[in-house]
Length: 440
Image 1 (spheres, one colour):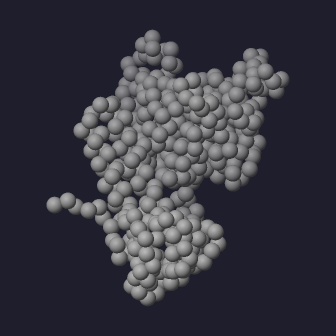
Image 2 (image 1 turned 45 degrees about the vertical axis):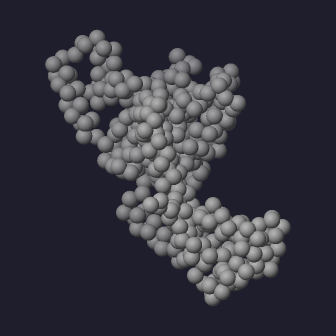
Image 3 (image 1 turned 30 degrees about the vertical axis):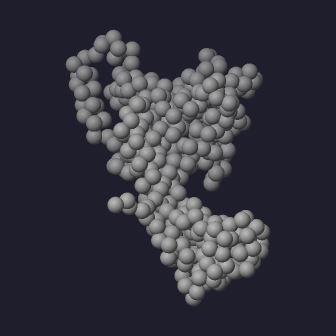
């Protein structure tokens, strides 16, 4: 016996009957209910007619809906005036329209889930492409259903809920449950910490030390017990581990590669491996698109929880490098990737910290200190970001400077706090890392 997809004709007719009784009731459901949520074609057409009348600021009642359906050539296919009278007769009041709409929306989501499941099954049976690609595609299909379901259920926040939310925020703020520490005293001072949902850009020219800073921030957060995903598109896992050994054991990378280490130092590396195995930091080093990074973040969030995502660096994402093989410019490709990363920060309520290259034009200016506008041509990074940090090292341009080993970090943008003066981070050569707050 063939099973019909989930649907409820009574609920669909309840929505439409309510609208024919009280046309203003459409304001209660128009943002959470789409015509495609109705299973039956006739009820879809009727709801479309009601929406069209509302958008033209015309009254919604039995007569106007009949005229709109007739204008579209759909009055008779919908059952004529007799069916409209039937809808009114079975729905004595419009007070329950939201309850009817909720049933229609939830059953629509179940049908979407069934369709996604069928497509996922097709991927499994075909087995034509890479398994990891198919898994990412499957996760994105489910995530799309989830996003649309959230949209269907979203409502304007009423005053009472807003007040309760503020009280909950007050409790979390007083108990310091919201912000995470950067692990650098002065950065914490100007930002008040890292907040969930923030999209943070760290911009610098090559060789300034942004990769090292990004890696150290990831370690600082993980050391606080926060679960993180480190996406490195520039280095493989071995290269990252060389830097981790240098940071954790105070061993130079050249020293490590030449194997010029004492037995004690080899022992320190073994101990560090044990620490890293317990640290809640996950690594993704393969060539990826922004959508694939987002899919992996969703997987971790759903399976084990995820508190932050760090990516080095945005221009190396595969979907940012396809300008020659597409009709889009690099500017548009980076913009699209940036919006995907920003969306994942909001969706998963985690900070997403992304390194970015700056425009090459700054190399030809007399003043080499980067400005916010140096991100201008890098897609919509500047506009999308909630926080922007810019790095500068004087010794890259002036080898005789007295500020050797000093990196300036300027908060050029903070959507909530504004700009701040530059912070000086000191490079500890013997420890192969920037100075932490307590060492400054």
